[in-house]
Image 1 (cartoon, helix red, strand yellow):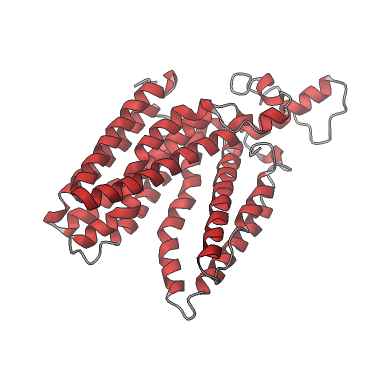
Image 2 (cartoon, one colour):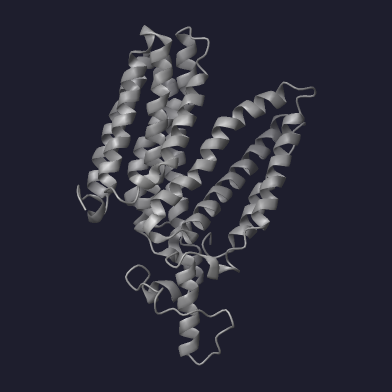
Length: 363
């Protein structure tokens, strides 16, 4: 369903899920449910649209740039929200969120790549799909439209087999939301996500319990680090084997944890760990998402992105509950050791489930 319908029709719907809450917990709960639905639809639609228009040979790099927007939002959003809450009245927060949602709606309505597919890179999945469809219509005796372009040089049968692109969809296909071919990227990411869950929800609290007054800078430093690594990802994301890149991400994650274990020795050590947290996050997410997408036919990229993001949310959500219990029972240090175990398990799973081409240490 997510691949079949126009992304710009789904994206506005998701952006309009922001509501103003004034009537207590029931309405607040409903608004959070709507927010979750909107966020899930928006992130899946945006990821699928990005993958559809990117040149195949730069898919990993492009997904990294796409995630750059999320990284910037993560670094600016919390501070902006806290500023709005501190204004009078505090409900200005909901007005601000509604305005941000409206801005997203305007941008989404101007995403017209599906009607201007001729301007897309020649190796992008959506352009190849449209060129193949026009070629087949011409062979069937239908008059090609004036927008028909020469396809002999742009259609790559190895990347997008004809049958995969133009196969007839059934009602069963529309409701087939589980895409198992995305699991090679989703499984390592889900196992790795507890690392990010600890960082997002507990790193700042950990720094505060150590008595550090600027513990919140951990998130700013990690966001800057994430932005930088994604901006230079073109040098390794699609040229270095996936397993080797994953090795670097896991190594950064483990180094971050070791620095967090040593954080009681000084605030600079704690803050510096944010650098490696940002590197681990900035590398692993677009890497594993590109593995999931590349292993899936283009017409199933919506389901592939949905499964990948679901695995991401499950890994962060469930682990955060577990980290809370472990923190209360055994302390933050024990949780950090468990995070290291998750990183090692994620790396081991990558060696097991990655496609053979992604497990080659050398091209």
